[in-house]
Image (tube, rainbow, N blue to C red; front, side):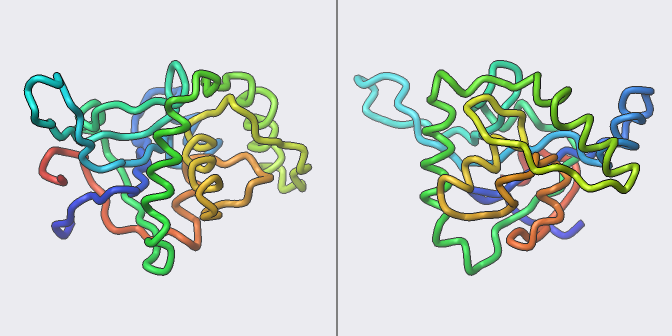
Length: 192
């Protein structure tokens, strides 16, 4: 792997190579990718007003557990990922994408959507495996799995990395025409 640095607005997709039965079933169903999140860059945070200085933390945006959240990138160190970056013609939209990510993570309605797994993802996987057409009844709302949350940020910023009327999966980002793979490997602090 050649040396590179992650940049603000890079999309990181976890690679699923685990050997347990659940991971094998997931890999058979939805492919080799299991989770997606976005690197926001090093955000400046004021710890205390009297200090008069800001600290910088590498942060990510994802939907996981509670829902859409911002958290320290170090929580994902040690995970195998593919790093995707917007193609040059769309990079002028990066500030807007980052703003939309912070807004969405600040929305108390942005919960994790467990029901979409049963209502949309499992049927989509079954229909794809049977080579049957997928009915377009999916609609976006404030509850989101990881791939919906990342897509929602880009759609709000008017960067259509994926279609808005089909349930996105983590692997969908790897196939996007607006994103280019810039690296892959085990995520670590050295990538900053």
